Image 1: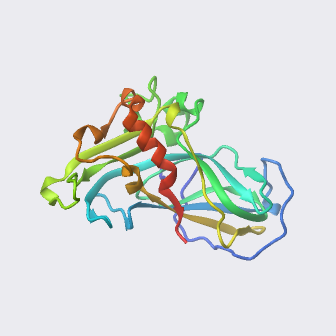
Image 2 (image 1 turned 180 degrees about the vertical axis):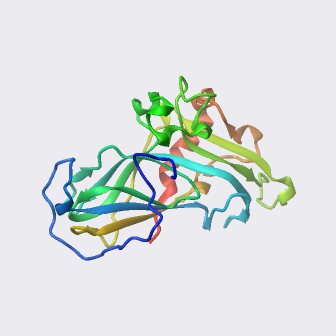
Length: 260
């Protein structure tokens, strides 16, 4: 995310470590350099098994053609689950995951062993009321429901492109239909809890550790009848009160999995 001030993507290679270390008992939200390491997310934008390049037509495993023109979302309130099951909440975490950027520096975190990660997709009810000038991560007009961020709040997830809507998933490229899902509002703030990762994430003093995660946007179509044109568009805040928006929002947690 090139314009975010809270979460800054790191575009240089980082040294990853798999060496175990003694767990930290620190519960402080301020972590000093002498007892901490750098933690990163490496996030891949996929449709099914295909890593997305905008404008390219892909075919899913079921044979359905799809192309993507935008796929991005907000991630916030990142937590690390320690090996003993306790939680370390990383303060002030918010990023806009964009297709063109994969690596995001999250924070310095206490040394120790972490077995999984948790986070939210979207902004909490307070952050959803912020002016777009509150942080450059929010100053993205494509993630607003109107001409300005307020009073309607932010789009938490935006997925737009064209897709084969035939019943048998065997339509031609020429017959692909446009779709757009702009999911937001407090009702669609989702928490994602990934399973335990093997091996664990071991953070040692002065080291870097990176969680590789795949985001499969094709999961959003689960249970959606695509040959009904009314199921292809959610564009406004009012659209987010529909049964369709609820179904798509409920699919969001299933989008995320470990890459490795």
